[in-house]
Structures are given as C-alpha cells and as structure tokens.
Length: 409
Image (cartoon, rainbow, N blue to C red; front, side, top):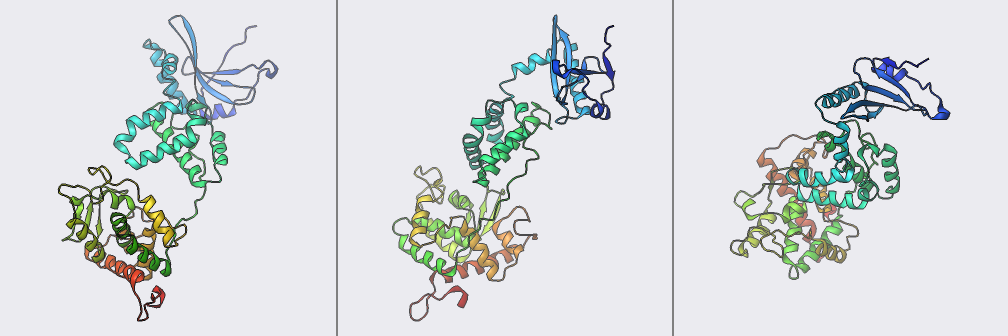
C-alpha cells in the first residue's frame, strides 16, 4: 500500500504540534506538505528540528530549496517567502540557482565588503569606518568571514564573547558590528530579518571610564603646559582649548578657521559626533585662538593643520599628550578625560546637569540625565564660569608662591 503524503495548512499551531514519526535509525525525515501551496512543505528531522522548504521542477530538473528553520523564521513569513520563490519558478527562474550564484555575497565576508563599499562612504564618519575596520580585522574576519550568514549561530557569538571576555569593550564592539552587518543584510533582502545571531545577545556591562583631575593634578598640568609651549605650541594650544571648552579632541583638531567666530565668541562646527553644533568660547579660549590667528599662514584652512598643510592634524595628540601626562604625573589620564574634567568643574561650581549637558553637546539626554535647551546667553555665562575655575586651579598661587588648592579657595 502506497503511503499517502500528509497535507496540512502549515500555520503556527500546526507546525508547533508536528512531531517526528519516522524511523530514526534510518535517519528518515518526516514531511508535511502545505495544503494551500503545492511544492511547499515542512521537514521534521529525527532531532526534532523543523525546517520549511520548497520542492519544484524546472527545465527537467527536480530541485529542493530550504526556506528557513522554524524558530528562526515564523510559519507566516516562511509561507510568504515560499510563495514568492515558487512564483519565480512559474516565470522560468530557478530560485536555488539564484541563491547559489549570490553565495559569495551571502557570506559574512561578502556582506562586510558590500557594507564597506556601498553603505559606509555615504552614511558613516571616517573615524567610525576606521574603528569598524579594526574590529572586523581583529575579531570577526578570522572566524566568520568565509561562513554563510545562515550558518552562524547565537552559540558562535557566545563563543566569541567568551574569547574576548577579558576586554569587554572589544567584545561588545564585535557583537555590535556583527549585529549591524546582519541588519544591513536584511535591509538588502539577502536574508530574512529574523536571521540575526547577535540580535538578542546580551552585551557586557561596561563600567564607567570617567577620570577626573584633582586640584593638584590640574595645577601640575598647568605648569607642564607652560613648560611645553616652546617645544610644541600647537599641541599645547589644542589641549588648552579642549580643557576650556569641553570639546572633543577630534572637534578641536579638525577645526576650520571658517568655523571660528571670535567676535561672537563661538565655534560653529559644520560636523561633529552629534552633527552640526555650536561651542561657546570663554575668554581664555578666545585669547588662544586669537594668538593662533595672528600667526596663521595665508590661505591655511585648518586651525591645527597636519604635515600636509591642506589637511587637519590627525595624530589625536597621542605623543604630545603621553609626554605631558608623564611629566605632570597624571597616571592613566586620557586626553578625553579633560572633557570629563570640564564637566566635573562645572558641577563643582554649581552648574546644573542640564547646563553641563548642553555645553558638552550631548545628543542623548541620558548622558547627563534629562536637560532642556539653554538660551545662548546662559551657555556663554556657564562656559566662562568653568574656564575661570580651570584657569585658577592651574595657575593661582598664594603670597608664599605656593599653589592654593582648588578646594580651599
């Protein structure tokens, strides 16, 4: 007696209830065909796993193509995909051949190549691209580049996290980039949106890395900056501007003269991490920029040009800052911590978190709690308060010539 094929409407409840009824020793697969769509079925393996597929004949060849595993895709989405692929067969197109021809693009390496060449140039800032390249090369390229998107599992991502657990920031960066690549592949319709092994992976909790300078450290920094002015005046000027404005190092180093409004005491940045923004200039910052402008070479576009005078300085002051940090005995203090120092001095001087968040140009309110937009005059007054306190902390002395600690003023 010939065994009749099982046909059912492959909706969620039917797929969930389906059980393996074959001969596991012979490694038989059970198949349930969809009663609505000829050629569309559900395969149940001895392990209990279930996957949707289509079976069709084209140009005399019998073909079978997997749509997706149940759990990674839903019954409804699988049915829609199957219907679309079987319609191609009716038009004389072989969907399995299409997939095979695009196979090099559906590897993670193929998606990365397309992401880097099609998406990144118009959507990402240069530094973001550099960081992504570094993460890809160090953590993702080796284990995942050659693998099919659908073959990489959440367990694989867990192994990656475990391998990088001693550097939780690197682990989180790798997972986030992997997640972005899968999301972009879904936008390009290379895979269904639900196929993303990094989607629900929990990131490591990152401890705050803020470092604040003490009054003694600020005094030592001020002394060393004076000593370093002759050796590297441009670096010293840039460091002081970062300290007095709370700006990011990249914002200062990429600063163009056309963005400097000394009369209005403001920097009008065309581009920053959070988009176009204004930065208030306190008196010490105006004085620094005015001095640089007097020495500016004719036609020079950048306030801090690099070796190629037509481009900005791109060293992020690594060597000068390491030298200054060591001489001032600042330990592990990063250049970016001067921005945190600006905020901490502002808080010590009684500025509200709303004011500090506005001065630092935070895009998300959670960064400095919730704050409202400040009027221009209040921002200018606030930045003057911080700069005055910083100047005093770095240079004020009592009658005996000893530095007066910031806390005792």
